[in-house]
Length: 394
Ligand code: HEM
Image 1: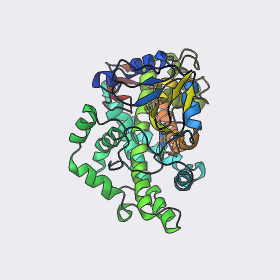
Image 2 (image 1 turned 45 degrees about the vertical axis):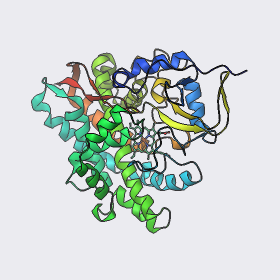
Image 3 (image 1 turned 90 degrees about the vertical axis):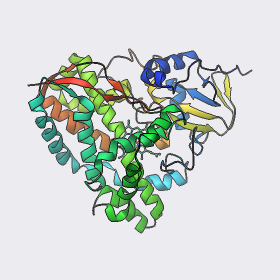
Image 4 (image 1 turned 135 degrees about the horizontal axis):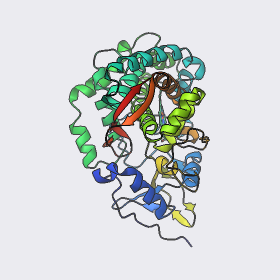
């Protein structure tokens, strides 16, 4: 006998909830294994066991009709919104272009960019800087469009573009409309033009999508969408995970000193940041059959949200989940997703992390928080958009 799925008492996407997302999501996870959102026919799973199993079972939790899915959206409708076999065909193109072999030569250029940036901030050593706007955004917003082959002109639109795309992944509520209204038309024009073949540099990652179209592996329209996906999916996720590293370094100074002593843990420090405070709060799926979750039945056809961030703090799975511990094993982390849609850009994100965190451990003795972080006001993404911090140079 199936139990009644409880309705959560809070709008998890209101501005107040977004500001306090960790606490709200943790409370949702502890309410029941499955929870219905108030006023919406959407069910949320937030316990690690269920989120991991749901992500793995793409036949039962299909990606083809996600919650709040709007086929007319400006968001690229490809890959994340497909199941195999279409998904497999398109993913192969992007996965080839982002393979460790194809990317390994970038380490040096990334390291040079990261060192130059950290050195340029030295004059402000000891002063309050913005860990996002002065550090992680300038780094990612340079190396990513360089790699994609996007023209210099208009790159200042990256933040507004990212904010707009993330807004389209959640419900059309007040925050969604605010994000759309805050996006000037030139951002759409720039993003659209940036993904056109004639504006991408030869030999770039963006151009590789069109070369795959020349080989008949994707259509020309799909190639353009893939460039747009790379421009949006790769940017703010990495910016925020790196910013959360800086936040963690100031809140857990012993962990930062451990990292300085053992720089082989650079990637582990990034992976732990991703578990500790995941920028992907959740992703949507649709149940293709009745699914039993610990005595609660989700009816076929129900749209569901799988909550990565809450699952990454589930005390059933993680010891002291609120502690940032760079020696922790993160093989079960869902920060990059899991299953067929698991992040295809993981190798690139880790290369970027190694470069920036490597430059920081070399030059910065300690980080000091200088006020509260300002949250990113978006619904399915999460993390600091401003991070007042002092960097003390060695
Ligand atoms: C720390 C940085 C990153 C985080 C936290 C992150 C997170 C994620 C997550 C959680 C998913 C799965 C979404 C789902 O199952 O619905 C995903 C998928 C994806 N990510 Fe990332 N990502 C990051 C960096 C990147 C980068 C650098 C790229 C591109 C170069 C990228 C491209 C993609 C793409 C294309 C997908 C869709 C894969 C598919 O549907 O098969 N991501 N990412």
